[in-house]
Image (cartoon, rainbow, N blue to C red):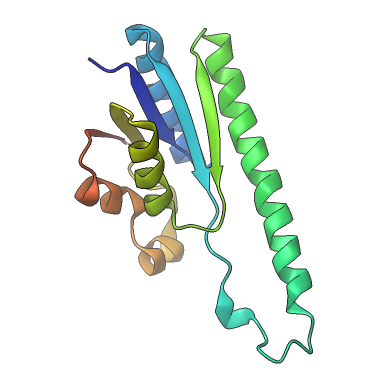
Length: 148
């Protein structure tokens, strides 16, 4: 039924539950796994339009830190999947809202199932940014498995 499974993660403890579930499901079904993580877009409200303050350096630092974090998150999932013999591919989508990145990747790779944790963020961040999981569930044309 499911030959290719996309699992989304931000590296949080709650997202790790979704990852563990997706890895086990892929192993049990003999499916491949596509692991996706995304970094939020750079906040342009912090950019000085005059260019006098040197905000470009902050943007470069943000991109470098995002890339390092994504690499750590994806490497941890890759190790978990390899240990269980699950074939996988990893994708880092830079500076795009997570729900948009997940849906675009799912469409581009024609996956059969999307697996996500119920919420990757907690507290105020979740209230301000909304639930990426809710957005994926509402907009996806593919089955979405939400892990609590």
